[in-house]
Image 1: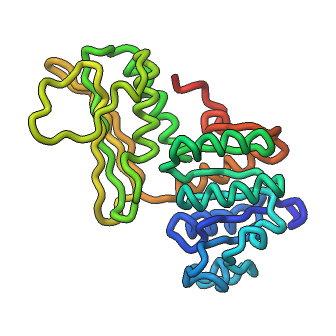
Image 2: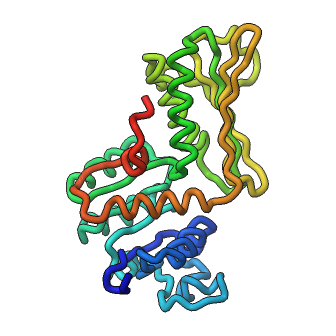
Length: 274
């Protein structure tokens, strides 16, 4: 494929761990080309080549100005912080550039802003871009539909020490899928951690527990605890490569797509998880 035919990709958070994995993935793809790299103002990576960490040269300089980074882009892939993503989203909307969002921890107003922006540009929004996680969500829906409220549900997730939101977006999505399969509202049944004299566990509760430490990439365990037996469904990420490859699939999906808000099951051609 000629350079002119490749999809032009900009990466936000280019100096971070996920940003670097994304850059390496784009550079290794024959149908994509890195055209921009953005990081926060004051980052030590500003002004350096986006592939310097690979001991290579991409010809793309990491910049702080989204307008500069997005100048030639056909899609932005963003794994940053909620405030940063919303700022990038405004630029994408103004420039009519599609965006893949893997950022988590959005509040209600920020989620509404993303939905509003999808009226003008196509957006893929997912708390987890991994194909394995999407299949895990389907398994959870099947388990919840068939096991019923007689089985207590607890979700335990673990991530690296630098993750700033808890529970993880993936854990919350797991809870949403389970609650929907049980005809519940997650807002009404979620219990976040326990301490002190908590009383008897409500049968309808979905418990969340967050572990933070070291360099754990991502570990999600869902317990369906019944009387005399327990079912465990677990997904473990050993590296960020799976997230990156899913993100590239999402970027390809957006090429020529009509405006709207899409999720990973649509990108992957999977049936609804619940």
